[in-house]
Image (cartoon, rainbow, N blue to C red; front, side):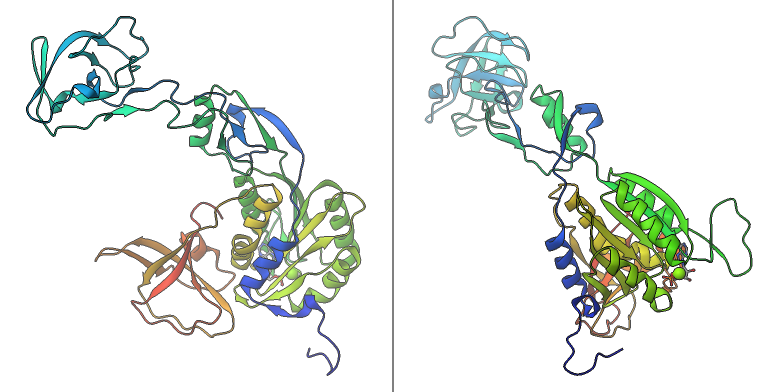
Length: 422
Ligand code: AMP
Ligand code: MG
């Protein structure tokens, strides 16, 4: 309904663009602050709570990057071949105790500590060995080559990883390389979740005429679990104001975030909206996008910790697209993470697409290498917002930007890869 002239539109009622909605969410959220210590083996996917400072230099010593011969680079001649005498062998993990004289070298294995005074390694394949002698042709290598410097990977006292990192396998290896067994991580975010709708049936119940199984709770719970967060499943709630209020209050009592689906589109909007206004604030309500236009976000009023509501549309594809476009990064931000933004790829679309400027449109698609090189996206079929099978076949969303118009076949389009994340 258009408000009467002179009556300002409440902020929550304005139709906002996808970019505005993302910015409003990012500006509103306040991350959790509590930390806990966990052993490295339980730290995968957790959000680092403090910088990890390196207690040592890595590597701890200068060492050889190649199998070859270590010597003092000052011995290299430019006029003719350099000849060195081999006086011993160095293995990784066994430091050298003896002394090396002028014109001498040591056979050295990759990773072995470079003895005091030796700064250069000639690789086996770049020299000619004859009994005890090694010959190096001029111009083969420069002083200092093939030596890994102490601390070149990580320097003692400096941050090896920064707070806010979502720990990946390689990060755990990095922490282990410092000899650190435990890390400080943010406490897990708690996300309570329920589905709304009189027509919804849960698994194991018979499907009466006009009813559908609740699929959103299963896809959304899994998407939240994938982020390493705690899920509190509050089940199905009928389209009944009293039941909705009771469940929302129960959710606010246990969780940082309340994630709902259904009940925000025109038919149900009035009482859901009234409820949100009683229990919190509606930051926005309508986003100029397809699928997913009814999507509400706002803080919930609680005496203690802040709580946040993301009310997703009920249509299963709209629920997942809005989750990916808004909720996923919001949850990571609340969990204390500073993730890199998801990359927006460019790919050639294989077919023409109709598009109306003034809203962002998302199309389910598969991104794959194209026949002529580069990447191609192909839509996965019917794009109705209830058609979950075409979402299941997809690994990416084609994002037709707010101001963009129709797209011709073969044109480059923006693509968000989501494979495995929703
Ligand atoms: P709503 O947003 O409540 O108007 O729902 C829009 C459409 O999505 C309706 O056809 C619903 O039946 C369907 N829907 C709502 N919630 C779910 C759910 N949890 N699982 C599957 N379909 C749903
Ligand atoms: Mg409904």
